[in-house]
Image (cartoon, rainbow, N blue to C red):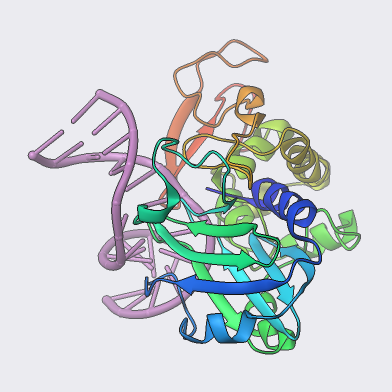
Length: 280
DNA sequence: TAAATCCTGTCA
DNA sequence: TGACAGGATTTA
């Protein structure tokens, strides 16, 4: 469940470790995660230097020469520098069957893509501009300068359906998944099943404030390791210790003491406080 | 708008 | 041993 804060943490780590590195070799398994012809990857990347490492929504990308490698970590995907603490730590990366891509650099460093569940995706665009077909489908960046109260109001205006699926669908706002959507809704005091058109100006404003807040906190704490997530050094995040509701069903609300609940909303588990979060 | 799909590790 | 987890896409 790498969401925006986790992907951002990985991108920052890779930026430190891989800036201006030049590719020597690349290996790709034929796994389903490759959504473009993966046999082209070694040839296209060899000899190219990393120019930029970026993030858009939950996608991470590496610009190598004219090409762009776009990666979505899905559920269990990890981008790791070789030599980092890959779990299980005793297993050498060589014969780890879950490693689908390995990029070796002239310095001797190696970047690995590991994804046991194969929900992730890797795409190679020979020209970076061609990645627009992926990114143009994504909604606004909630930590970007364009995310204003006015924009947020406009996004919600006239929308049908429930607020939780809206926050998670990437086409309106990009980067939030189950964890940070639940946390933002708690912070705003809004029940996940609240119909969007029940939200008045005051609650819209509170939600608007809550979204960047929880995402920034997530980044500050290096992301949330609930299960699979690790950063590029193989280390766990620390935001799981700060969670208010996600994964805390049956425990007491930190604000009011009531027992937190878990329900299904739009087919996804949603954690909330029945006292602090209201539909109206 | 909702459900099915992909996929495998983990937990009850 | 079987249910569950879930992001994004596909299908009903």
